Every structure is written in structure tokens, then in C-alpha cells.
Image 1 (cartoon, helix red, strand yellow):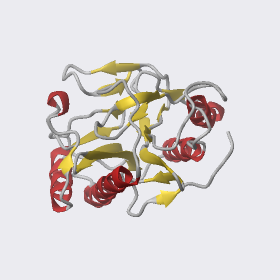
Image 2: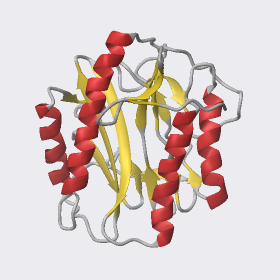
Image 3: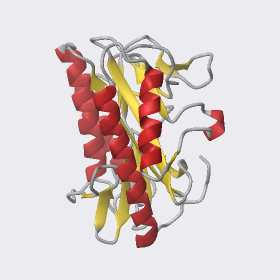
Image 4: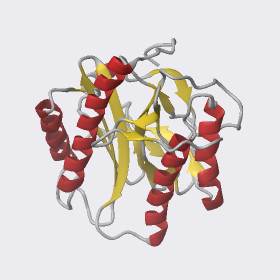
Length: 262
């Protein structure tokens, strides 16, 4: 984490994070449209960089601890942190895109996984369930609940399907830094862990593997892959715990979350 102290935000800071979040949503839309068979990963990065610039923002990722691109592009068995380079998308791939933007010093961070062309029902289900896990985690990301409630909601979504729930890479607090306290694991026990409070902002991001939860890092020092070569899916949104309730800020328009008990 960039910071160990949980930073509390008010309406003005949340407004800026919403601008950054809308930029990230625009990046997602543009990359989804551009991600066609034959397109190289580095072309998607160029698309993303242009969108971020056009929205008056800066990329969160570019230069972060030396990271060389504006987005992470992780096909197939890559879980996260794939560096967009020369690999060209193929029909039947799945592709995870993670993007972050900074507006006046405040961050938004979100990710999605998409199928390229035709994939099997098993693979389509992996993508669908991982996204559902994200929303299940968001639904209990309410002031008064605990971090364990969030992790439990995510983990419980994976369990009936036998997916590997990645444990080494987790969600996080977010604000002036992309990665802040607290850690937001994708596993946990109801009623345990830090109590969530108004003013917090969380980036919630489940990562599920078709096989084992075990991971490995490639020689580039960034790219995280499944240890057994199985496919992986990854979804993420930034959630703001405002006075009016919890708001997903990394959508085209901020969305108030329907309250759900843990």
C-alpha cells in the first residue's frame, strides 16, 4: 500500500473521485469497442491514453513503480498486471482490462473481463460469476458493516462453482493514492474485520480462476498468471461511502448502491 493510514474524504473529494471514475468508465467503453481479433494490446493502451487525456485526467498506472503503460491488459491465464505489448487478440480469448485515472489528485480504479467472440459456456460462466461477486461485495460495502462481510460475500459467490479465489492480490482503499489502507481481501468471515465508515473509499476487485487459486509472476516482474495455466477473470469498481450511502463512482454516472445487510 502507498499509505497505511485510512484517509477519510468529504463531498468535495468524492466529487473529484467521481470525475476520475467517469473517465475510467469511458476508457472501459472505448477499449471494449476496440478489442477485436487482430488488435494488439499496445493499440488498446493507445486508445485508453487518448481517452484519459481527453477527459482532462492523468493515467494512474503509467510510471507507477515504473509500470510502462496506461492500462493493464491481461488475456486468458493472466490474472492482473499484464503489460500491453505486441500480443494480438484472437477469437476465443478472454481479456481483462484494468484502468485508473487521476483528476486533480484523486483516483478512480476499475476493471472488467470480456470474451472475444465465441467462448464455451464454462468460460462465459466464469466471467458472469466473477462480475456477480463484485456486485455482491459492493452490496455489503456499507457504513456499519465490516471488511469481512465484503470478503465473505465475494468468496461465497465463487464457492458453488469451485473457482480458485486469488488471495495474493486483493482490493484496497483509494483516494489521493491509488493504493491506500485498508486491504480489501476477496475472502473473509461475516462480522469480522475493520468496521466500514462514511468517508472511506474502497476499490473492490474479485479475481477468480477456473482452476487453482495459485499464482505466479512472469520475468517482467509485473504480469501475474495462474500457476496451472487456467483461465482467470477480474472485475473491479471504486465505491465511495458517502453521507447519502455507498456510491459506485467508476460508471458513466455515479450509482447509489441498494443497501443490503451482511
